[in-house]
Image 1 (cartoon, one colour):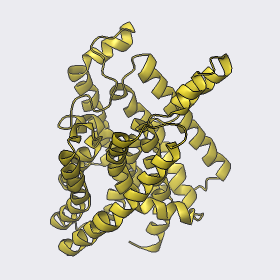
Image 2 (cartoon, rainbow, N blue to C red; image 1 turned 90 degrees about the vertical axis):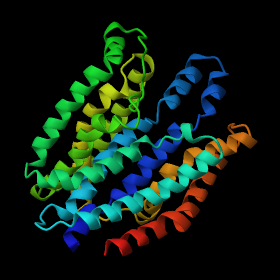
Image 3 (cartoon, rainbow, N blue to C red; image 1 turned 90 degrees about the horizontal axis):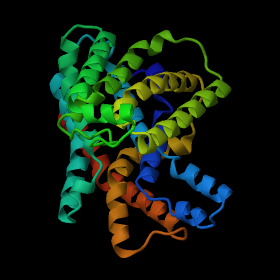
Length: 335
């Protein structure tokens, strides 16, 4: 990968870490919510409601899908030669080995069904499909359009009860989660989000205009506020994530485009970039860490930050002893 490509990728590790932290906080019940509700007045109740809807974990996962599509395709988009074997070996080992250890650990502790790893099964499917999609010789934007229509049709067939729930504003076997169709079908719904990242990689070199930091902040604020809105709609107005998040991905596309352009001209925060190196370990480890901690202690406002710190610490150790060696093994076998 040449210097210009490295510059374009700069900043994405920081985003991965922030997104992983959003997922983390979405899986850790905020003890400050009941604390402020306990004051029983309008201001404290309102504040409790706000902080209870700050972290849309599913929205962060959708952003991960788009980033993944971008990172996978960008190094290969101008290459005629593509070694499918090397690509699959590297991607499957890099993702699969750390995931396998988490599956073994969560199964050992009897909490596998509680692990939110559905998106990683989707990722492995997308990696496997990518070489096949390249051979189709079709523009990826047309593949995206087709997959978006396919996802809508799949929703109409598989999730008609969610559609009825939002139309009638009533619980008709309502399932708010994006993965309500299970790990073997959710990839169909999420495919257009991943392909958006591929399309983003295709179009990056054609966006020459610089982005100011103020404009970048506006896009970040818009995405954050919309994530809160979709969280509220899912929790209180029967708009399932499986119906809304693919449209949210369109907003994420334009936001990430601004991020990539901005960091092609500006340096990313070195600390956040380093923290982003173990964002995958943080993503797959944090829920198991929280489950085990809750077996021995009660979460409250006094140990809340301890839970977060331990999740970061253990995830970093997991990165050093599991994920990082998996990267090296993948590169070695990929040669």
